[in-house]
Image (tube, rainbow, N blue to C red):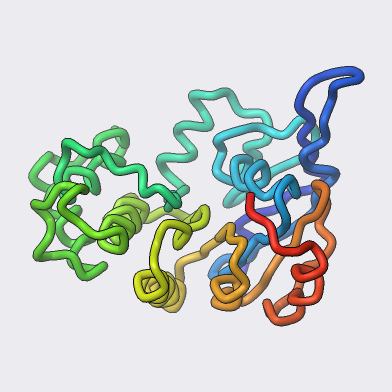
Length: 247
């Protein structure tokens, strides 16, 4: 491991005010080093999604500090957060979030179109998107639209899109949630490959067999970290005690 990529200190998120206030996160402290593969688990209502939204600069904490790649992003404006998301974060969602009218290569190109700082031409953008699709094994499907692709293939397109701007971190929110067992394993093998190539990954999942692919598992309950272990097998008892759980 090397330098910290993510540092959160006293991270707190409260929804509502007064008697209806709900604390989704309670003084979370965590560090993710560059090159780590971390899974986040916990029962429904544990704060997983809130934590992921803040890590992805989709939301801001009520209190506390979030430093991403050396930059304090805790209280940035919406426009500033959008800039950070585009430059530093690649997202992989459970529902793929592909635009149905665009083929695979155009879906992968989208983050490049929003990045005015790269200075590349449309032809260069397309060439980069084609290379990203080839890297995830979809070179022959680049002209197919989402409804012409299987779930696993759509998720590969989403991963190619997440990689296109060479982000500092990949955030995967239930990346296998809509996939069958075989497709899930293929996607996890692809994430492993990216990890071996040096990518930093943070993944939310409620599935123990998927979490076991990670090097480290952070387990949340009631907005607090109750376990932070290097091996997923160590949280089996905790998870079973909560009778499973989703987001």
